[in-house]
Length: 631
Image (cartoon, rainbow, N blue to C red; front, side, top):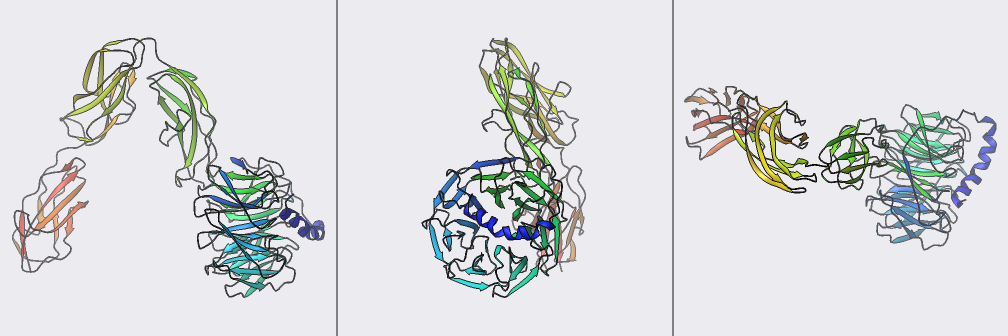
């Protein structure tokens, strides 16, 4: 058992004895399902306690055991490095990131405040009060300093980034100040474990206290929410409290009895997340700003969850003091193991299905498949069912993950893998291995399609015809419009033919829009067809206003012209000469058929202007040129 946990137990023994008769027992509800991953620290029984996010994109945590006595750093991939503290048995506890880009932590037994750079260089600053017991909390203040609690000294401390410490006495004697956070009102807010109060201290050191309604509740962790309130845990009262900046307190009972709520933080979903440290809890809790609580069981029994924070990956990270582990609870749950055929042949598409993921942020999720199981062949994020065509024989591992479609950096862990064996067919098996071409075309026009075909079978392919089709979707089939073909005389097993240029003809009666061109060889369809925009010819725009050769026209005239069918935008030019070599004003990307010239033109000057329509294939012809003279 770590020293910090021992102190917590000793500190709360009196509170527990006084309040035992008043505890209301609730039926323990089953913990909700969540994807929690645990990472064991290199030092056994290291006692990880406080945790925070560093400016380097890693998580930093304290290790309070005698064997570790240091600061740990863990990447979002779970790689841990430990940095020992020079002071023996310092028992580091709380940790936060400072305004100077370093990490700052408290030393419960060392009676110091520590600073560690992201390179692992540690500096320590002694606290003036002897045996001040700084262990519950440290936070960056709005004044550019660090603020911390002194449980033994009954004080709130302030330390500059240069290490100068000032202390402020808490009015209530033996209050044992514990957690501390910066509030939305530019003050610091802290809990009083023995005082049963929530304290507020200005950056000038003026303290105000607010009594918690539940007697002997043991207020511990505290955090500010996005709505401008403060939330705190009641370690003995088994509640989560909310306090406004005016001091109005509301309490919400945790469903699991005697769960020991410990520390609390704002989650990526805007809810509050907290740890339940006692053995009867051993969970991570979530409470909405309306007071609805959900609990998630930690896999390791009796792990004593302590500190908690949101990681740079959008997931919740927490410490397990008695288990010597760092836990991560995914904001997006891991999807089910993909299902699909156990075997198949090259060149044939096979569907695979996963699902079951949800985001705690309440947003939709999409899925990505790893077709080889090593991250080298990934699908795009999309539906829970996706198809894969393998071009080489072998045994593949298919797995899946999901991400939050709004917060795309929030990604689940990979699912378990599904094994599928792909073999080459007995005869020839010709597939289209690549296809490319221009991005635009016109009805009736001829374009060149670059394509390569490969024989993935074990026999020579003779007189093979590749048919090219145009379609409104990516699923090319023989029901689409045939626009061209090529014939291959002989193609040996494993051989390729191409890239070869094949001329195809776009249908004359096709409407303007976005299409796909793909090929089919026998039953093998190219499932990565080339997208192409088909554009109709653009007519000339007709100028409307101001009238041609008009006089006394405004210096910022409203130019207008006729609508051109299938135009997506318009361009306008104004010049001082009819050859448009001296452009006075111009505009592109206009979506309306009018433009007020800005900035204003010169007065008493003759100008020439013209307009033209534009679509995805480019601009159409210029209109006739008109002129006007400004007033």
